[in-house]
Image (cartoon, rainbow, N blue to C red; front, top):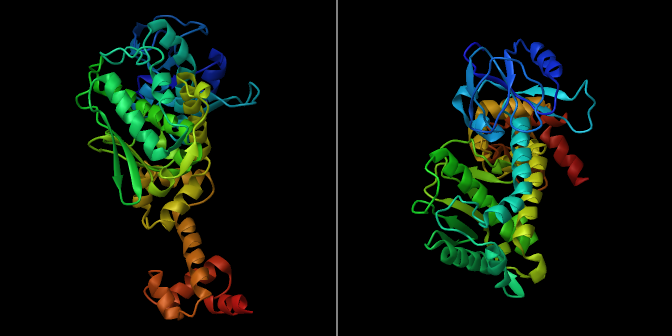
Length: 403
């Protein structure tokens, strides 16, 4: 790790705790420093734990730029860095946990996002701008409340998406948001290519737009909770690789490298008529609270990885590479995460095979045709695979089912 500039982000630990824990993993701490995010800082002496800022532990260089957790996750020079976070309900001895940038660092990103959202209301009041100076066009406080107040008493997800898109287009002065209906789906699209950003850093723009997509989804969840939450089928991002600032793969399929941003919902659910919340509950503050709720659901989604893999296989993603791409990660990452959870892709694929086989065994299909339908070269291969999973042959399973 001689070329790593930052060895650790750390939060709430003593210097001794962090040093000892990293020492167990063969990493030596050179200095502890802190400062505002983005600041390039010199460090020539050890310092204690600061009340504010982003503490970091540094290996060997004399200067370093301080990064937030999401920035650190995306920065190429920090790929092999360690992240340290405090586990819930842990004492000092077990609180320090050294991990790579895997699902646990995604939880750290979610925690960072939630912290930012919780401070967002004060920031909006301070700036007098719901866009928080990220757009060249100011968005007066109360703008979101006004948009949501125009929704009818009974509304569909489709109608809400259309009205929200049109209203924010007027507020931002351009046709940036559109709603597209296709067979079986509704997509809320956001095209930022001509948007008047007050930012010029491409990575910051990607980060802002991914969080804007979260904001749009939260508005729809607030308006039609069941339809938007259960109906979300896919998130499209312009970012070319699976390293988003908002890990949407905790909720649904994510597609990268799209020409525009998008939230695709189930068309049937989008047409269900629902009673909108009371006007006093349709506020900017309520949208922020809903974003936090959605982020916490994403965190729960990381613990449900095997179920997400099973769903992807059931939906026709038969290779590990296809499933990994659907979930927004590399095949190697998927293998590692499944291994940490005590399973693997082959085992989960076998589970789905047995599910399908059991369903077909209750019909009159022949075993040869059943084996072919499940992708086996011959019935003997199918018999071996089925027996290895269930301990009995398909023929025995069929007889048992018919009794």
